[in-house]
Image (cartoon, rainbow, N blue to C red; front, side, top):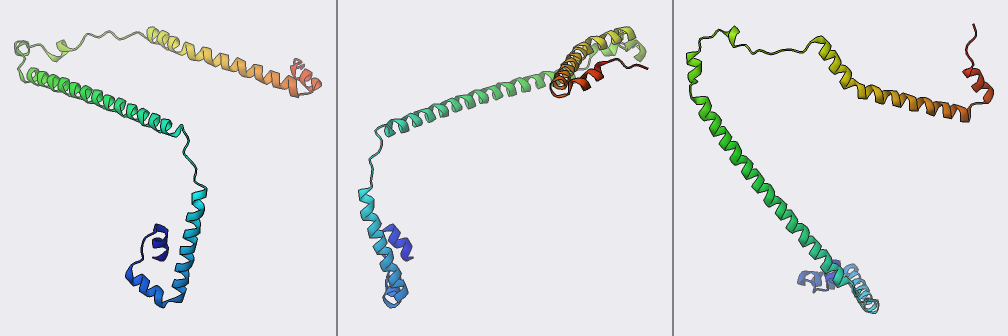
Length: 179
């Protein structure tokens, strides 16, 4: 309590003053804390520096940029809100149209007595040759890239081999095998 009150430069409560009057340890603590506080306060006045002349401008610039960011964020939230509202209106309108159309009985379906086989879709599936051609067309860029990567890797290995392997070992590895 003594340290807190001395640091805050405020008066001690009555019960603390009574305790200090009867306790020598706390009285000495209070005296040393008060003396230290007075010494620090007196020396602090000599070391006080003035603020930089550019400090005010920097602070005001930071505040203005913060205000600009907040205004832009509010505009973005406003646009997002309007976009979400428009999307919801479109969704509700589409749902209402769909519900109205699905609740009407189809008059053409009642007149039609065609069998399920007749109602099947007439879909022409691609031939095996077409699927094979599509596969080759889709795989061509990947195959080309793979060939380029392998060629680069081979060139890198050959360069490293020429740089680090002795010439006699390198020459023996390039000679055709004689059987």
